[in-house]
Length: 139
Image (cartoon, rainbow, N blue to C red; front, side, top):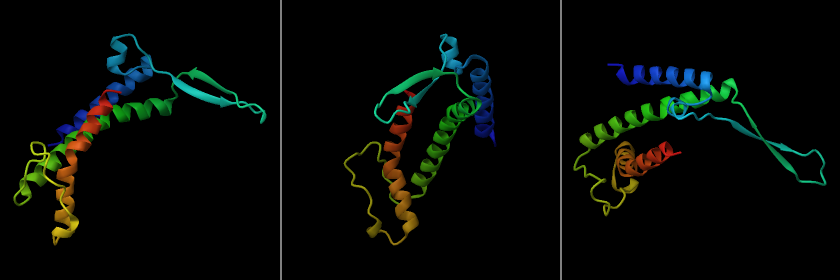
């Protein structure tokens, strides 16, 4: 019943430990990579606009944020996928917007219920949200 939450928690712990030990995510550490933080230092002289950049090791808060991001993005993606599927199944005359891109977006004015209209908007926008999440995985 709580399988996605348990998987996300285990993934967070594994990523956090890998980041703490090797300054790299699990996949990065297999290839010998490591993460650093680029900081910007501005010169105190107002007549000069010199910016110095330095590579520094990740702080504990950076490691925690990175591990949370690596664990939560797939978890939230899975939850959103299930929600959209449930909404699609519950909508009257639901059309599959993935297959028919010529379907116009639903209008808030054509539906008496704002909840129904927002569900239709979510179903319509979901392919774009999904593409955005998939694009984040490439970074």
